[in-house]
Length: 93
Image (tube, rainbow, N blue to C red; front, side, top):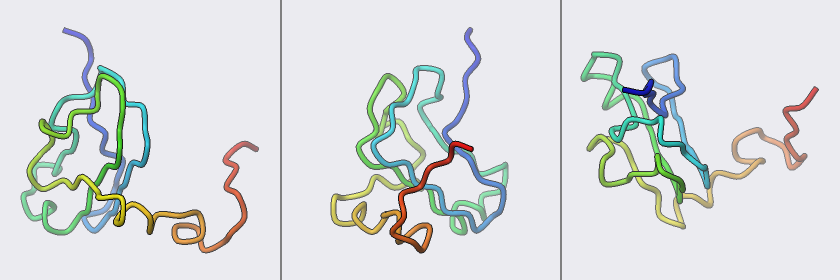
């Protein structure tokens, strides 16, 4: 069996993780997200996707407490909205 991972990328119970227009590989488990073995995290954290593609994009297989964003909901996730600036984000050094 190949190594399988989750799309989760958080480290605090009140985290907010949103993937927009991401290509997701077949190495992802269908559930996608993990509650770190603490059901209370399902209410505290916010996990969402919008228009994921690829073999790992499986909205029907995701955990019930994750969100699939509508176009209106996805529009709030802009560079300015996330980083507080209109400058283009360039993670390269």
